[in-house]
Image (spheres, rainbow, N blue to C red):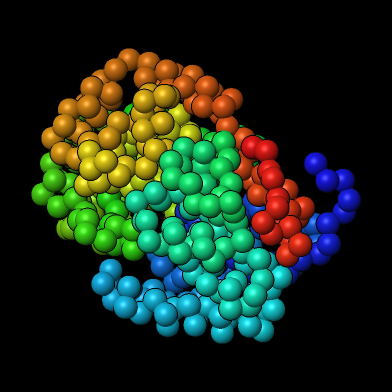
Length: 363
């Protein structure tokens, strides 16, 4: 640990998704409290800008750049937009989750810290690692991305779901309009329209309806959609703002989801999770999910919805399943680091132009 007081920095964060807003929240709050200046560029996607505002941050927004194919074709314009939005700020370090942060840093000739955990986005990961000063990944990340690749014993979701930062709030039952400790299930349906989802498709509405009708035989059912819901499912919509989702996840009996991030979040909160995703079984499923399933026994992944339903019914019918998962959660937390503290230390003490290429960080 370096004991000297760090110099004050001008830190540019590029935030593309709601989960990234959560990831950087406590890091940014602490950096501001320590006297650093930050600027946030946020993609106007989902609830990302609204979340940042809820957390007390102002941000400059940029628009999504279209469908999956158009996103690839228009990415250069996006990079130019990031550069223009940040130019007046004159950042000393750029921080983000991917290639836009690395390209922006290269334009400014400043250090870049890039974090990612999607192992199957090979081209994007390789380009990012070539341009960024450092790339930080979970230690489950299999490929080595060069001398600037740092692995840490943690997931990005621990930056906001570690017990130091998250305390469950039972009043979520009031917001859900059900009795305290009454069992309920959350179904999360993502659009799968991100750049790392190219070639994949979301769960058809017919399968969504099948899941809802099966699970409501056992518990209350709430659906958390990304985008609109069909008329048949609208009555099941999760009736809470996005910034309350983790409290709902904590007390839920079960999550069934095609969202990789929310699957990890459920596991870290001690809630059984069944993941339905087209990437399962293709040999490119990120190691983080194999670790959560094989080492900790906290999630189950399926490609076929029918098999997922069978496992989900088995879990929701199992007595004491939440208590069992709480124990698994404690084992996982004992193995992992406080990601927020790690990132704060790295940004303040290691991320300088002079340190590029020679920093060694123990995790």
